[in-house]
Length: 526
Picture 1 (cartoon, helix red, strand yellow):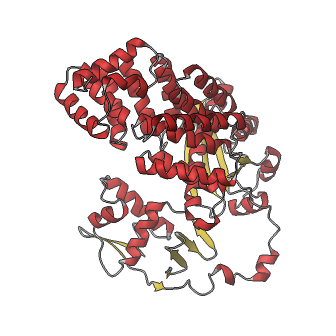
Picture 2 (cartoon, rainbow, N blue to C red):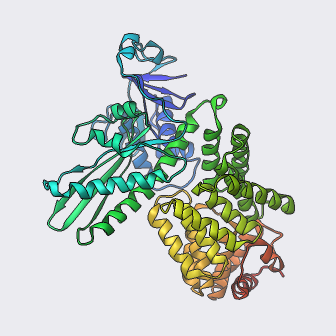
Picture 3 (cartoon, rainbow, N blue to C red):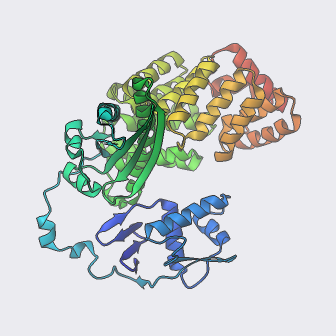
């Protein structure tokens, strides 16, 4: 049942927080936290209780809990100072203290009760595309120097051009989005008039020879902030600075747009899902990387393909799920699954020659499933021509270069991916790649450090546990190697020295020997 307080409605079934007729964007854990506080409003809820309910007992930092409480307060117009609705009880926990009505929204705020005349008076809005859509507005020049307009306009034009290369994204042309230049605009109005779900806006300040550019990504449906950052540099090489800003902005907002779309898809009723929403749900599960989530992701990608038989990225992601099952020792029938994964990947390539995501995932899957490292790298390099800001193409290209025996080139690829997407849900995979590259470069301490970072996010990542065991053993840390090997044998009891070549597509004999020697020293049977 929905819970109404002040002019807000919290609907557990639709997982939606609304104020009047408009939805308020909140993350899933913030929604769960707010819902639990509202449901338990007669009681003080302890921090431990919130961790058990919202994070399922997973260990998170005090700052994480605090940031989620602050986000819940912000969503309902509260603050840590006012504590109008969410009150902190010293040394006890938190309590929701607002007046709540259960069972139905407050009168006057139901979508069905929206005034028909007022609705008819609104200008006819373009229909939203069936994929994520964004308008990039002209950035404001706050420097007081009109001579710099050409520079900031050039930055924005480059951002529009780079975003337009992303196949899954609908981008409004520059001439339309620049129509608002110099105006004070309401992003909700921009969203209605241009028919987009997201708006990117920003500004530039110049002092002496330095320039600061800020950007923020907004949800045009709610006006809520999704991302904001600032970039600084000198005007010594204006084109280099322009390229740097474009790369960082596009790399950052592509990830945030995907996350926002995934959360939107999760809120849709199951019976109304279409191919793209199934694809988004599958992508969210793929990022989690557990055996259960990959199984679910495969189902969702196949649902997407049932609704769109030419969906190249869905074929590629399904193929990539088979790769992930292989690298973690989860395949029940390896020959059959490898063949199926290769079939899906080749179909993705055939359908998606201009789809960077399809080429990225399918190229990497083929490199691992059938050992075609050169062909996989060629597909990933083509993906980077299509979208040079795609973090996944950089880090998966790094992996194939690790297996081909080019650890230093691989490290450059992983570093570029991390810079493009520092909050990426696949960061643990980038860290794993770094670990493998440093292992084969003979830097065993660095390898174990990177691997242990990845392990903290996903303890079931078999390759990471193997690198931890091998790198500790090769560095002479017997106790640590033994502990890691015990965990490795629990994850995959069938793994042996003799079947390492069928596990990972390691091309150079000396790299294969390094990994085998380390695992042998750690206690892996022949």
